[in-house]
Length: 179
Image (cartoon, rainbow, N blue to C red):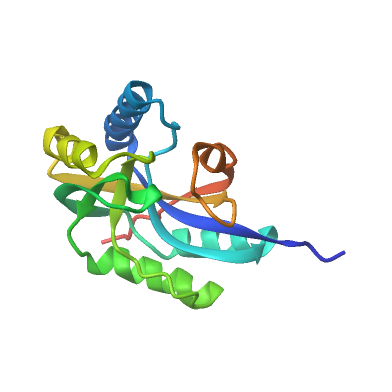
């Protein structure tokens, strides 16, 4: 029997210490601003795939990619719901290579990889977002990432209900390279 295709996202996950720092920020902002809570992540790619195929792509990417680090560039805000308030990372050849490898496996859908980690999803006035970006301090200059996660997501993410609909399908560790 053929599996149905579903919308999935491939996420790069912070290592435990960094994940705890970002989860605390996400939780605090969500509580303060009545916004959804979500797992801190960097989106590498999205696709419509059968679950079995998506898990294969995830595991292949994890088996051929080493843990990596991204440099924190700034805290920024935008008009986009999924980038209300976010940490912008400096460009990274390793992260871009991982995103490109997943894109080659699932097909190009026009997603432009821009390494960032969202801290808040909420429709807010521009002035409030700018103030949040100014006041939010990230206690890390460099963030380690050591896992990939595959998540089922709605076709659009425009409100808290869409975020609550996310469902983790699988996670795998990035494989350290031997020296």
